[in-house]
Image (cartoon, rainbow, N blue to C red):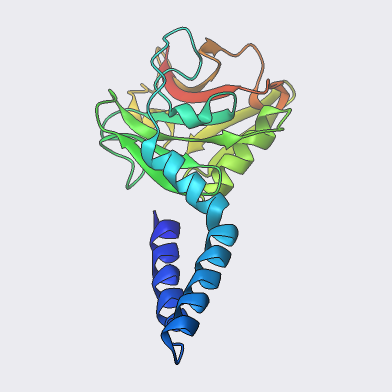
Length: 210
């Protein structure tokens, strides 16, 4: 929404400057030219902001994008799910949505949980590349710590939240917790560094217990 506010301010400035002609005829011509240039230059941004403002949630339960904004249909998405009371600062109270340019444009307060989805991406072929981009555009709010093993990368924490911060992990290891990786609604059989993506892949991280 900050882009839209900036455009409105720019429009007002253009109108003021363009309307400063000495005569009414010159003023009208100046305004007309200024408005045409403004619309040509800002149309892509205006179109994007309008799409965000009017977006609705996908309601097809068989669609991997179920519950996500419809402007992300056929796009790649990364979601981070946190238990209530264990989300990074600013991400409590529903699921927040961040577009691929870093714009936070919608919060689903009815969603049963806390966290965020970062979406609208395309062209990523491997999970780790998409994850890194989602972390980057979100401003590092979901920076992760990991451990490299021979079988792949293990995610130890996301957004400063380790699994055992949100679930009881007794010292005798009789139970525990871990960051589970899902791809299009199914538990991934490979790690994030080896996960092949589709054009409309939805990656979801959620804390699981054992």
